Amino acid sequence: MAIITFLLFTGFVAFYATWKLRRDKLNTRDGYFLGGRSLTGIIIAGSLLLTNISTEHLVGMNGSAYRNGAIIIAWEVTSALALVIAALYFAPKYLKMGLTTIPEFLEKRFDGLTRTLVALLLIISFVATLLPIVLYTGALNIEAIFEISDLLKVSQREGIWITILVVGSIGAVYAIFGGLKMVAYTDTINGFGLLVAGLLVPILALLSIGEGNPIEGLSMVFENNPAKFNVISKEAGIGPGARSAILPFEVVFTGLMINQIYFWAMHQSIIQRVLGAVNLKEAQKGLLFTGLLKILVPLIIVLPGLIGFYYFGESLYDTPDSVYPELVKKVLPLWLTGFFVAVMMGAILSTFNSALNSAATVFSLGIFKRYLRKDISDSKLVVMGKWTSAILAVFAIGIAPFVANAPEGLYQLLQQLNGIFFVPIASVIIAGFLFPKVSAAGAKIGLLFGLLFYVVTYFVWEIELHFVHIWGIEFVLNILVMHLASAILPKEDRFVMQDAGLLDLKPWRHAKSFSLFLIAFTIILYLVLGNV
Image (tube, rainbow, N blue to C red; front, side):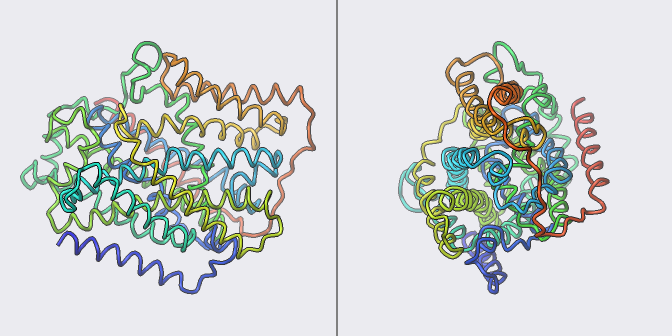
């Protein structure tokens, strides 16, 4: 029954997405890489949610919540603030310029070399960090629930290898042959499937604990260890113990918001959906609806970890990434596990497909067309994008099994590695918008300084600072270095943003009021749960 429900849901998603794409032109640049600039708010929100939420969240964040409590919630609820900034400030500018990629803005603002450097960093970050961790956590989840190794009579390590290979191959097929619109449609269905399936896990667990009364069940989980529900960490962010701290509260005011703004307003795999919007109104709707979903998402990726502590105590303390799969097996009826694993597969495929599609877009338009074949036709550019996706998928599948045994959990590992790329790129993009005196030479020097600063301070010197604090210091220093270098080196002509005239730029009339609601909700959440 589990296998049947898995196949039925997976088959439905594939059929629906293929049917919706039957009239689309996928051999043009905008058609393949931007979904024909036809995405609506609901499609953008569903796709953004599933692009972001994958098994590294379900497995990694629930594992962290089990071990360290609800402090990990900061990664999620502060996203709403970044999405407000993305909707009100960045989206209107991106759509006005008619961008296809974020590095394209850097060429307009600075020069071609800045665009190329950032494009290369983006591709490396996808292949070296995001894609392998997504594949590994997905394989871990599927292996734990379906016990693939027992079915195939192989070792657990071999079972995970096989699952990585199968899931990675399916994801590559989606990304290669369907382009962004295929990814967006499958994301939307799987995204709402994920909400349903993800909420079923804590609801069924609380019903079981409370003997039919979920409120009573939640009360029992809370009384078992009230401190786990506090969202404000008392960990030290500076000095002894700072490096091993999970998320000290003060980092919210240093590097965390820089990371969030980069991810939700500048990260290619996220913002590509916004660039594919039919108009500014739908782009803002998609971003702000995602902000609302991100505030609710902790019910799926934090609460189950707290429930896991009620069930398992400290018995899984050394293997926190096994908590969520064990909880799923414990509370879900067998016939529902197939649907659940299908949604998990969708979550893995979504993030994997999105990163592949974004990397292919950045390489094809930013590197191949610019340096190797300037006169290439749209149809041949799409073929190059497909080949790029295939090659990067092979690399990611090969690296994925080697990310096991991260000492602080897989989600923490992903964030630590992201710091190498995210903050330097963010500082250059923000300087491009906010600081007109920063020159192309200054941008490149700031980018290289940022890369070296984080690697040296965190991985070489191992200074006693939490890595998110290092992000904050790095950002400020990057901006200062860019200004200093720009003052010394020659300037270019002042950048003037041009309207490409591609889309209707009339904003959504509820954008500001919806934004205020999201900001107020986030603050109230911290005030309430910070006093537990």
